[in-house]
Length: 299
Image (tube, rainbow, N blue to C red; front, side, top):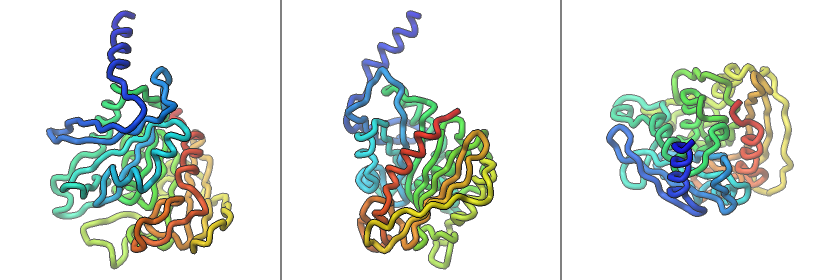
């Protein structure tokens, strides 16, 4: 009992308070870091859910904070928002989500190991609920979500990739992992149908339909979805439909939020540049995924 009290006292002394923080750690001899947003309503005495938010290729955690608006959602509902940083040069970072070919694959960081170390570190300075650790991210970050679901299913309760598909060869989780996938049908960076003539030769990834089918099989969900169309509230050139497969084994669902006319964007957030396509404002990815995450804690 005395040892437990000492550990709890030490944790409380180092605990992160509300606001934004940068944490550093070393993984495989390489210094890594991540950003943490602690919401105002955070109570260190209560286990708190965590949402990992992964950046896309060529960007970083700081950009992702503003691009996704997830810290605002954190303030609204009370989860800890965590923004991991990949590796690379200066602010131009990538995550090893798989799919790299040739020289691109050489020297790639073990980012699954990094995320495990990150979660261990976060638990020393905040009261993490281990049954409610979720992952989202865009593009390369969405692909990282799929990798974590496959290779770290003992720690990741559910995932919500945005504009990113499966990039690893095999997905063999130890348990069903609920999936909510957001993707624009007009995405020209991670095309809905998989790599096309514009995709760099050193990258490979699966189509949206392949990714959904793989996880539908893993989660033992039915082949036919229940389809719901969202109201076309905004004149933004997009329409949104929800395709829900399941529930399957242990209640795990696979849900596709399909955006007709949508580009390589984060639903509910205005696109920062026109080159990445249209962003739907008919739905909020942040709202939909948080509702989904609440339904699917680790069992």
